[in-house]
Image (cartoon, rainbow, N blue to C red; front, side, top):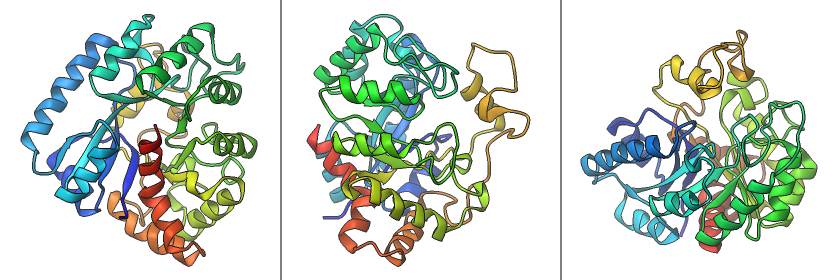
Length: 321
């Protein structure tokens, strides 16, 4: 069985996008439902999703584990797995880790660009690593089955998370820094340690993380995948597109600034990179998976390796945890 899984999307959700994901053959999508929201705001987001599930039950349903990916594949639907791009919903209460799991969350970043109560984000000047609270939260996440995601975290913090976590962690949406030196992209040393520990990397299609940004070519992207596979086990590589379809540009400023800053000149939201960037023309939405499949095969990947990157590797990761 070959699966297609996009392990990170943050879109302005609508039936149109669910139809696109089905047209692309996606069996599962890990969706960001929280950036800066606290626990009460999280519950409001979940109510919005309950309405989406009800109104689009012919296309989507909530995913809890790998069995739901099988179910989606058989029923020609897409299983939706909830994730957070920050630890805001657990506030400063470790008991909320189990609560958010019970509400359906399956992935949680310890940080989103900045220092959090748990770890250091990739935009901080000093990376002090995973905090005491962070160690306890990782232990609790391991216990309940919540995946540690370090996509927006700094290097030492990510290495700490790999060391402290008894279960493999994930970097759901980032690229190697040897190919493009964005702050969010990851070093070769880190990626090797991630792979050796059983962790997964989801390669991002977000233009700010791509060489030549919007003008990145399919051949260039697939060359990056091939070189990444020289560092990591190819079975530990997947896709986490970071698609942000149909959002107004005000949303990207909120993503970057949250409620902690009034500035419009932070990080990727600087005056040099305002708003959402345009996607490469070969990956305008999830239907670009078919282009990646062709590109990977052209780059020398076998059928098994190609289907692994497009979804089977994520499926096996879900199954292993």
